[in-house]
Image (cartoon, rainbow, N blue to C red; front, side, top):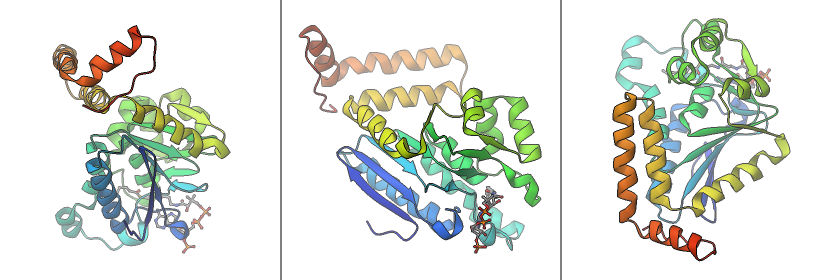
Length: 257
Ligand code: CO8
């Protein structure tokens, strides 16, 4: 696949997507979000891929939506084109997507990272929702996902002041799952992704789907949803293989069936 604003590669069963607009600190242009969506379509459809890592550069995961592109937008164009909806493709990906964040993850960049399934952060990572300093508010999930992840008080403070959060605070607050030395970020993210990709793909996809449901519905319905997916697992060859391997004291070889 040839893209202008992202780079893609595969390593075994893992796909690595790198945001690549270095001169603009990976600002999320319309083209970048379109290309990202196309890459996700491709990797989601590729049976050989079990997990996707999304990353940026050492300096910036992404410094937000492209301000230069947005500056002259009028209401009707913004409303009709609904540029922000393109980020929905990330959360809609049925395979796991890990955000590997180094440097700035600001505005739409923070929102993009939060659209992934979890965030591995370099010790250099800085998260923020600085839209308020531009005379706007978050528009790609910042007021919603950030609030669910770190709670109302911190989300409110970050969105109302635009202050940045360092990696350590982000981990304490529950925004990121782990902090890694910057030099190890990509290797560790790929290792984590390989581990996930080696498991049963249907089990991974259903676990992801079920956890995502937890954010949308009440507990009793969520538990019923989980139970239905759990019972469905007994229709897979991978369940037979996983449990047989345990009893035979050997490693499981999952086929994704
Ligand atoms: N958009 C466009 N260009 C950018 C962006 C951006 N978000 N961020 C950085 N750049 C560009 C700079 O303009 C500069 O380009 P040039 O060399 O041509 O002037 C280049 O990247 C390097 O940036 P700096 O020189 O500013 O680098 P510094 O190291 O001095 O500063 C910062 C780094 C602190 C990250 C600084 O660049 C900054 O504050 N950037 C803007 C951060 C921001 O406000 N992000 C929020 C954007 S709004 C948003 O994301 C809304 C999401 C909802 C969208 C809904 C769509 C309709």
